[in-house]
Length: 353
Image 1: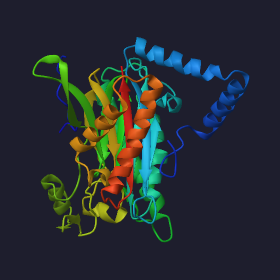
Image 2 (image 1 turned 180 degrees about the vertical axis):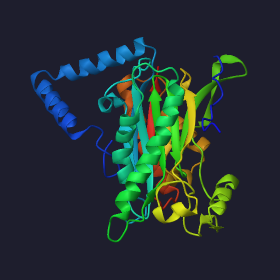
Image 3 (image 1 turned 90 degrees about the vertical axis):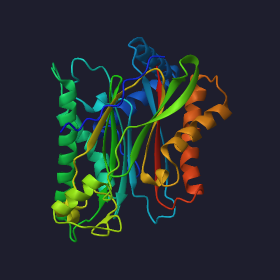
Image 4 (image 1 turned 30 degrees about the vertical axis):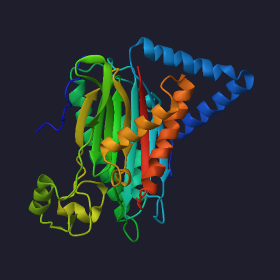
């Protein structure tokens, strides 16, 4: 069975401790030192380089992606979420496939039973992905990306379980994972558990190119034991589902970690979805279930769009960046205000063609 669930064709019209360091230490230190030297010599160098890179992306017709993140602990004793923002993942890759000019990566991990599984996944999953990533001439890039993502999730899960079982006492942490990989203008989302990814696309209304309405497209699939296919797998493995939970305890049916539930049918095989970005796309929201406990996907998209309207329709690029940053922060804060006691982590990815 093909795990890809393609969305309809468009109509014509990091950091650890809630994030992960996004570069290998040596590379990061070298680039930081170089950037500091350049800024001391001429403060405008960095800005000019960034503007030139933006122009290059526009010339190639590729979307310019920027990530913004907001994290709230809620009423929990500790923050068990983690996230990664890698708008340019090329720093982690030794080589790119010949037909790919840019790779981006964004991810949200929602831990349970502790923060160790989510932090491990945030630190290691994209590094494992980089090692397995296809390169050079490729005949079937889509198939290779699919295999790469599935193998990466399996390897990350196995590596964490090995480390967890070696501890005294053994770690029992687990984590959801919602990871978005963007190759040129094609989005691949791989996910485990109940964190989600949704896309805001402006669609023509009534055949008019002037009137557009927002459409919310799901880029991920939830995994919980109440879903028939998930429950059947758990029961075939000898597990039970009580009160909507595996063995009456675990709320998700797929995860990284959770070694004590692997024998009960809890797996680390992600669902994969693919979507080609268009000039009608505005942004993507990746968030843990803390957000979606108090927001529907449509409500979250509308909340962000309403904030943009309040800020004015015509904004300069720097103003847009401030808008997205503010919208991301307000969305997370509103989830807490609405009564979500769980950790809340939101990544808002802007899309500019």
